[in-house]
Length: 374
Image (cartoon, rainbow, N blue to C red; front, side, top):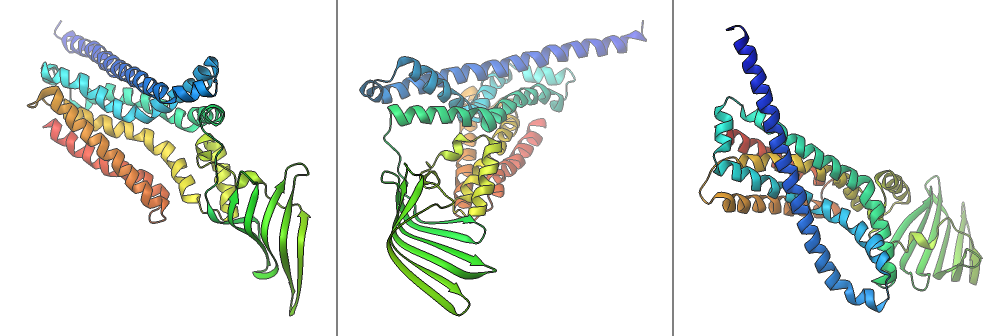
Protein backbone atom coordinates (compact mmCIF):
# COMPACT_ATOMS: atom_id res chain seq x y z
CA UNK A 1 0.00 0.00 0.00
CA UNK A 2 2.84 2.32 0.87
CA UNK A 3 4.56 1.54 -2.45
CA UNK A 4 1.52 2.70 -4.37
CA UNK A 5 1.09 5.92 -2.38
CA UNK A 6 3.66 7.95 -4.39
CA UNK A 7 2.07 6.69 -7.61
CA UNK A 8 -1.40 7.63 -6.41
CA UNK A 9 -0.03 11.03 -5.41
CA UNK A 10 1.38 11.57 -8.90
CA UNK A 11 -1.93 10.53 -10.49
CA UNK A 12 -3.88 12.90 -8.28
CA UNK A 13 -1.43 15.72 -8.99
CA UNK A 14 -1.65 15.03 -12.74
CA UNK A 15 -5.46 15.13 -12.61
CA UNK A 16 -5.34 18.32 -10.56
CA UNK A 17 -3.01 20.00 -13.08
CA UNK A 18 -5.27 19.03 -15.99
CA UNK A 19 -8.24 20.57 -14.21
CA UNK A 20 -6.19 23.66 -13.37
CA UNK A 21 -4.90 23.98 -16.94
CA UNK A 22 -8.37 23.81 -18.44
CA UNK A 23 -9.70 26.22 -15.83
CA UNK A 24 -7.06 28.85 -16.70
CA UNK A 25 -7.33 28.28 -20.46
CA UNK A 26 -11.13 28.62 -20.43
CA UNK A 27 -10.95 31.71 -18.23
CA UNK A 28 -8.21 33.30 -20.35
CA UNK A 29 -9.72 32.64 -23.78
CA UNK A 30 -13.29 33.17 -22.57
CA UNK A 31 -12.50 36.57 -21.06
CA UNK A 32 -10.49 37.50 -24.18
CA UNK A 33 -13.35 36.59 -26.55
CA UNK A 34 -15.91 38.43 -24.42
CA UNK A 35 -13.69 41.53 -24.27
CA UNK A 36 -13.15 41.46 -28.04
CA UNK A 37 -16.88 41.06 -28.75
CA UNK A 38 -17.66 44.07 -26.58
CA UNK A 39 -14.98 46.28 -28.18
CA UNK A 40 -16.06 45.19 -31.68
CA UNK A 41 -19.66 46.16 -30.92
CA UNK A 42 -18.55 49.55 -29.57
CA UNK A 43 -16.26 50.26 -32.54
CA UNK A 44 -18.90 49.20 -35.07
CA UNK A 45 -21.56 51.38 -33.44
CA UNK A 46 -19.27 54.41 -33.51
CA UNK A 47 -18.22 53.65 -37.09
CA UNK A 48 -21.85 53.40 -38.23
CA UNK A 49 -22.72 56.71 -36.56
CA UNK A 50 -19.77 58.33 -38.34
CA UNK A 51 -20.48 56.89 -41.80
CA UNK A 52 -24.28 56.69 -41.85
CA UNK A 53 -24.56 59.90 -43.88
CA UNK A 54 -22.20 58.52 -46.54
CA UNK A 55 -24.14 55.25 -46.69
CA UNK A 56 -27.43 57.09 -47.17
CA UNK A 57 -26.10 59.73 -49.55
CA UNK A 58 -24.49 57.19 -51.88
CA UNK A 59 -27.28 54.62 -51.41
CA UNK A 60 -25.04 51.80 -50.26
CA UNK A 61 -26.93 48.46 -50.24
CA UNK A 62 -27.43 46.94 -46.78
CA UNK A 63 -25.89 43.64 -47.91
CA UNK A 64 -22.77 45.44 -49.17
CA UNK A 65 -22.47 47.39 -45.91
CA UNK A 66 -22.63 44.21 -43.83
CA UNK A 67 -20.76 41.72 -46.03
CA UNK A 68 -18.29 43.84 -48.01
CA UNK A 69 -17.50 46.40 -45.33
CA UNK A 70 -18.11 45.24 -41.75
CA UNK A 71 -17.31 41.55 -42.27
CA UNK A 72 -13.94 42.72 -43.62
CA UNK A 73 -13.56 45.45 -40.99
CA UNK A 74 -13.94 43.13 -37.98
CA UNK A 75 -10.74 41.04 -38.59
CA UNK A 76 -8.76 44.28 -38.66
CA UNK A 77 -10.26 45.35 -35.31
CA UNK A 78 -9.60 41.93 -33.75
CA UNK A 79 -5.95 42.03 -34.74
CA UNK A 80 -5.50 45.69 -33.81
CA UNK A 81 -6.74 45.23 -30.24
CA UNK A 82 -5.66 41.62 -29.61
CA UNK A 83 -2.43 42.39 -27.64
CA UNK A 84 -4.18 45.00 -25.48
CA UNK A 85 -7.18 42.81 -24.74
CA UNK A 86 -5.01 39.76 -24.21
CA UNK A 87 -3.38 41.78 -21.47
CA UNK A 88 -6.64 43.09 -20.02
CA UNK A 89 -8.37 39.69 -20.14
CA UNK A 90 -5.43 38.01 -18.43
CA UNK A 91 -5.23 40.64 -15.69
CA UNK A 92 -8.99 40.57 -15.05
CA UNK A 93 -9.27 36.90 -14.15
CA UNK A 94 -5.74 36.40 -12.75
CA UNK A 95 -6.12 39.38 -10.43
CA UNK A 96 -9.45 37.97 -9.26
CA UNK A 97 -7.76 34.62 -8.57
CA UNK A 98 -5.02 36.40 -6.63
CA UNK A 99 -7.53 38.42 -4.56
CA UNK A 100 -9.26 35.16 -3.57
CA UNK A 101 -5.81 33.70 -2.68
CA UNK A 102 -6.28 30.97 -5.30
CA UNK A 103 -2.80 31.62 -6.71
CA UNK A 104 -1.28 31.21 -3.24
CA UNK A 105 -3.21 27.97 -2.72
CA UNK A 106 -2.04 26.57 -6.07
CA UNK A 107 1.60 27.37 -5.37
CA UNK A 108 1.30 26.02 -1.80
CA UNK A 109 0.11 22.68 -3.19
CA UNK A 110 3.53 22.12 -4.74
CA UNK A 111 2.92 23.56 -8.20
CA UNK A 112 5.91 25.61 -9.35
CA UNK A 113 5.45 29.11 -10.72
CA UNK A 114 6.94 27.97 -14.03
CA UNK A 115 4.38 25.15 -14.27
CA UNK A 116 1.61 27.65 -13.52
CA UNK A 117 2.61 29.56 -16.68
CA UNK A 118 1.93 26.61 -19.03
CA UNK A 119 -1.81 27.19 -19.58
CA UNK A 120 -1.20 30.93 -19.94
CA UNK A 121 1.42 30.37 -22.63
CA UNK A 122 -0.75 27.80 -24.38
CA UNK A 123 -3.62 30.30 -24.52
CA UNK A 124 -1.21 33.00 -25.74
CA UNK A 125 -0.07 30.60 -28.49
CA UNK A 126 -3.65 30.25 -29.72
CA UNK A 127 -4.12 34.04 -29.79
CA UNK A 128 -0.69 34.69 -31.37
CA UNK A 129 -1.28 32.00 -34.01
CA UNK A 130 -4.63 33.55 -34.89
CA UNK A 131 -3.02 37.00 -35.08
CA UNK A 132 -0.19 35.67 -37.27
CA UNK A 133 -2.63 34.11 -39.72
CA UNK A 134 -4.84 37.21 -39.77
CA UNK A 135 -1.84 39.50 -40.30
CA UNK A 136 -0.27 37.59 -43.16
CA UNK A 137 -3.27 36.34 -45.11
CA UNK A 138 -6.79 37.22 -43.93
CA UNK A 139 -6.53 40.95 -43.16
CA UNK A 140 -4.79 41.95 -46.45
CA UNK A 141 -7.52 40.25 -48.50
CA UNK A 142 -10.25 41.66 -46.27
CA UNK A 143 -8.69 45.13 -46.51
CA UNK A 144 -8.75 44.94 -50.31
CA UNK A 145 -12.51 44.33 -50.27
CA UNK A 146 -13.10 46.96 -47.58
CA UNK A 147 -11.16 49.61 -49.50
CA UNK A 148 -13.03 48.77 -52.70
CA UNK A 149 -16.29 49.41 -50.81
CA UNK A 150 -14.94 52.68 -49.37
CA UNK A 151 -13.87 53.89 -52.82
CA UNK A 152 -17.44 53.47 -54.07
CA UNK A 153 -19.57 54.54 -51.12
CA UNK A 154 -17.43 56.59 -48.72
CA UNK A 155 -14.51 58.53 -50.06
CA UNK A 156 -13.73 60.27 -53.33
CA UNK A 157 -11.13 59.13 -55.81
CA UNK A 158 -7.65 58.99 -54.35
CA UNK A 159 -4.83 61.30 -55.31
CA UNK A 160 -1.12 60.81 -55.66
CA UNK A 161 0.56 63.58 -53.67
CA UNK A 162 4.11 62.29 -54.22
CA UNK A 163 6.61 64.73 -55.66
CA UNK A 164 10.00 64.13 -57.28
CA UNK A 165 9.24 60.53 -58.21
CA UNK A 166 12.31 58.47 -59.16
CA UNK A 167 12.02 54.93 -60.55
CA UNK A 168 14.20 52.40 -62.27
CA UNK A 169 11.94 50.94 -64.94
CA UNK A 170 14.54 48.34 -65.99
CA UNK A 171 18.28 47.76 -65.40
CA UNK A 172 20.12 50.88 -66.58
CA UNK A 173 16.93 52.82 -67.40
CA UNK A 174 15.73 55.51 -64.98
CA UNK A 175 12.68 57.78 -65.07
CA UNK A 176 11.85 60.95 -63.16
CA UNK A 177 8.60 62.86 -62.62
CA UNK A 178 8.16 66.04 -60.64
CA UNK A 179 4.60 64.93 -59.89
CA UNK A 180 1.82 62.74 -61.30
CA UNK A 181 -1.91 63.61 -61.44
CA UNK A 182 -4.17 60.57 -61.13
CA UNK A 183 -7.25 62.54 -62.16
CA UNK A 184 -5.62 63.70 -65.42
CA UNK A 185 -3.40 60.63 -65.98
CA UNK A 186 -0.62 63.15 -66.60
CA UNK A 187 2.93 63.44 -65.35
CA UNK A 188 4.82 66.73 -65.24
CA UNK A 189 8.54 67.47 -65.83
CA UNK A 190 9.25 63.99 -67.16
CA UNK A 191 12.67 62.61 -68.03
CA UNK A 192 14.13 59.23 -68.89
CA UNK A 193 17.83 58.37 -68.79
CA UNK A 194 19.48 55.26 -70.22
CA UNK A 195 22.91 54.05 -69.16
CA UNK A 196 25.24 51.43 -70.61
CA UNK A 197 28.25 50.27 -68.61
CA UNK A 198 27.69 53.21 -66.25
CA UNK A 199 27.72 55.82 -69.01
CA UNK A 200 24.75 57.92 -70.16
CA UNK A 201 23.93 57.33 -73.83
CA UNK A 202 20.32 58.59 -74.08
CA UNK A 203 18.20 61.19 -72.29
CA UNK A 204 14.68 62.44 -72.95
CA UNK A 205 13.12 65.44 -71.20
CA UNK A 206 9.51 66.59 -71.60
CA UNK A 207 7.05 69.06 -70.13
CA UNK A 208 4.30 66.45 -69.73
CA UNK A 209 3.60 62.78 -70.34
CA UNK A 210 -0.03 61.63 -70.68
CA UNK A 211 -1.52 58.14 -70.70
CA UNK A 212 -3.80 57.24 -73.62
CA UNK A 213 -6.09 54.56 -72.17
CA UNK A 214 -7.70 53.75 -75.54
CA UNK A 215 -4.45 52.91 -77.31
CA UNK A 216 -2.61 51.90 -74.09
CA UNK A 217 0.39 54.09 -74.80
CA UNK A 218 2.00 57.29 -73.58
CA UNK A 219 1.94 60.69 -75.32
CA UNK A 220 5.01 62.83 -74.63
CA UNK A 221 4.56 66.58 -75.15
CA UNK A 222 7.09 69.36 -75.76
CA UNK A 223 10.21 67.21 -75.52
CA UNK A 224 13.82 67.04 -76.60
CA UNK A 225 16.24 64.12 -76.67
CA UNK A 226 19.99 63.73 -76.39
CA UNK A 227 21.70 60.71 -77.93
CA UNK A 228 25.36 60.31 -77.02
CA UNK A 229 27.69 58.11 -79.07
CA UNK A 230 31.22 58.56 -77.85
CA UNK A 231 32.18 62.17 -78.58
CA UNK A 232 29.18 62.66 -80.85
CA UNK A 233 25.93 64.04 -79.44
CA UNK A 234 22.63 64.35 -81.31
CA UNK A 235 19.82 66.60 -80.06
CA UNK A 236 16.24 66.44 -81.32
CA UNK A 237 13.17 68.45 -80.35
CA UNK A 238 9.48 67.78 -80.88
CA UNK A 239 6.01 68.78 -79.78
CA UNK A 240 4.39 65.35 -79.57
CA UNK A 241 5.56 61.75 -79.45
CA UNK A 242 3.44 58.61 -79.04
CA UNK A 243 5.38 55.72 -77.54
CA UNK A 244 5.18 52.65 -75.34
CA UNK A 245 7.14 52.58 -72.10
CA UNK A 246 7.77 49.83 -69.55
CA UNK A 247 5.42 51.27 -66.91
CA UNK A 248 1.73 52.07 -66.52
CA UNK A 249 -0.31 54.71 -64.62
CA UNK A 250 -1.07 52.19 -61.87
CA UNK A 251 2.53 52.48 -60.70
CA UNK A 252 2.01 56.18 -60.00
CA UNK A 253 -1.65 56.02 -59.03
CA UNK A 254 -1.29 53.50 -56.24
CA UNK A 255 -2.86 54.35 -52.90
CA UNK A 256 -0.71 54.69 -49.81
CA UNK A 257 -2.40 51.62 -48.33
CA UNK A 258 -1.67 49.34 -51.30
CA UNK A 259 0.75 47.33 -49.18
CA UNK A 260 -2.01 46.64 -46.66
CA UNK A 261 -4.05 44.84 -49.36
CA UNK A 262 -1.29 42.35 -50.21
CA UNK A 263 -0.81 39.08 -48.37
CA UNK A 264 2.77 38.39 -47.34
CA UNK A 265 3.86 36.42 -50.45
CA UNK A 266 2.47 39.20 -52.68
CA UNK A 267 4.14 41.86 -50.52
CA UNK A 268 7.49 40.06 -50.75
CA UNK A 269 7.30 40.00 -54.55
CA UNK A 270 6.22 43.65 -54.61
CA UNK A 271 9.17 44.69 -52.42
CA UNK A 272 11.57 42.90 -54.77
CA UNK A 273 10.07 44.74 -57.76
CA UNK A 274 10.24 48.10 -55.97
CA UNK A 275 13.88 47.51 -55.00
CA UNK A 276 14.68 46.92 -58.66
CA UNK A 277 13.02 50.23 -59.54
CA UNK A 278 14.89 52.10 -56.81
CA UNK A 279 11.70 53.11 -55.01
CA UNK A 280 11.85 55.58 -52.11
CA UNK A 281 9.24 53.59 -50.10
CA UNK A 282 11.24 50.42 -49.42
CA UNK A 283 11.61 51.12 -45.69
CA UNK A 284 7.84 51.52 -45.25
CA UNK A 285 7.18 48.28 -47.14
CA UNK A 286 9.73 46.36 -45.07
CA UNK A 287 8.25 47.73 -41.84
CA UNK A 288 4.84 46.40 -42.88
CA UNK A 289 6.31 42.99 -43.76
CA UNK A 290 8.30 42.56 -40.54
CA UNK A 291 5.53 44.01 -38.35
CA UNK A 292 3.16 41.23 -39.40
CA UNK A 293 5.34 38.69 -37.57
CA UNK A 294 6.64 40.78 -34.67
CA UNK A 295 3.22 42.05 -33.56
CA UNK A 296 1.79 38.56 -32.75
CA UNK A 297 4.99 37.70 -30.85
CA UNK A 298 4.20 40.56 -28.47
CA UNK A 299 1.28 38.44 -27.19
CA UNK A 300 3.72 36.14 -25.36
CA UNK A 301 5.64 39.04 -23.84
CA UNK A 302 2.51 40.83 -22.62
CA UNK A 303 1.16 37.54 -21.27
CA UNK A 304 4.26 36.99 -19.14
CA UNK A 305 4.20 40.59 -17.92
CA UNK A 306 0.48 40.35 -17.15
CA UNK A 307 0.82 37.13 -15.14
CA UNK A 308 3.77 38.55 -13.22
CA UNK A 309 1.78 41.63 -12.23
CA UNK A 310 -1.68 40.15 -11.64
CA UNK A 311 -0.64 37.02 -9.73
CA UNK A 312 0.55 39.14 -6.82
CA UNK A 313 -1.96 40.51 -4.34
CA UNK A 314 -1.38 44.26 -3.98
CA UNK A 315 -3.18 47.29 -2.58
CA UNK A 316 -5.78 48.60 -4.98
CA UNK A 317 -6.67 45.10 -6.19
CA UNK A 318 -7.97 44.59 -9.72
CA UNK A 319 -8.19 48.33 -10.42
CA UNK A 320 -4.48 48.82 -9.71
CA UNK A 321 -3.58 45.77 -11.79
CA UNK A 322 -5.61 47.03 -14.75
CA UNK A 323 -4.11 50.51 -14.42
CA UNK A 324 -0.55 49.15 -14.45
CA UNK A 325 -1.42 46.80 -17.32
CA UNK A 326 -2.91 49.51 -19.52
CA UNK A 327 0.08 51.78 -18.82
CA UNK A 328 2.53 49.06 -19.90
CA UNK A 329 0.45 48.20 -22.98
CA UNK A 330 0.27 51.77 -24.22
CA UNK A 331 3.97 52.26 -23.46
CA UNK A 332 4.71 49.24 -25.64
CA UNK A 333 2.50 50.52 -28.47
CA UNK A 334 4.05 54.01 -28.24
CA UNK A 335 7.53 52.52 -28.30
CA UNK A 336 6.61 50.55 -31.43
CA UNK A 337 5.32 53.69 -33.15
CA UNK A 338 8.43 55.70 -32.30
CA UNK A 339 10.85 53.03 -33.50
CA UNK A 340 8.99 52.48 -36.80
CA UNK A 341 8.95 56.25 -37.37
CA UNK A 342 12.75 56.28 -37.10
CA UNK A 343 12.92 53.36 -39.54
CA UNK A 344 10.61 55.08 -42.04
CA UNK A 345 12.95 58.08 -41.95
CA UNK A 346 15.95 55.88 -42.72
CA UNK A 347 17.51 56.33 -39.27
CA UNK A 348 16.98 52.72 -38.19
CA UNK A 349 16.83 49.33 -39.88
CA UNK A 350 13.18 48.25 -40.42
CA UNK A 351 13.92 44.80 -38.99
CA UNK A 352 15.50 46.29 -35.86
CA UNK A 353 12.73 48.89 -35.52
CA UNK A 354 9.85 46.40 -35.38
CA UNK A 355 11.63 43.91 -33.11
CA UNK A 356 13.41 46.19 -30.64
CA UNK A 357 10.23 46.84 -28.54
CA UNK A 358 9.79 43.06 -28.19
CA UNK A 359 13.42 42.65 -27.13
CA UNK A 360 13.29 45.46 -24.56
CA UNK A 361 9.96 44.34 -23.09
CA UNK A 362 11.23 40.75 -22.99
CA UNK A 363 13.80 41.91 -20.44
CA UNK A 364 11.00 43.61 -18.49
CA UNK A 365 8.99 40.36 -18.57
CA UNK A 366 12.02 38.40 -17.32
CA UNK A 367 12.60 40.88 -14.47
CA UNK A 368 8.94 40.83 -13.37
CA UNK A 369 8.83 37.02 -13.53
CA UNK A 370 11.88 36.74 -11.30
CA UNK A 371 10.32 39.18 -8.87
CA UNK A 372 6.93 37.42 -8.90
CA UNK A 373 8.49 34.02 -8.11
CA UNK A 374 9.97 35.27 -4.82
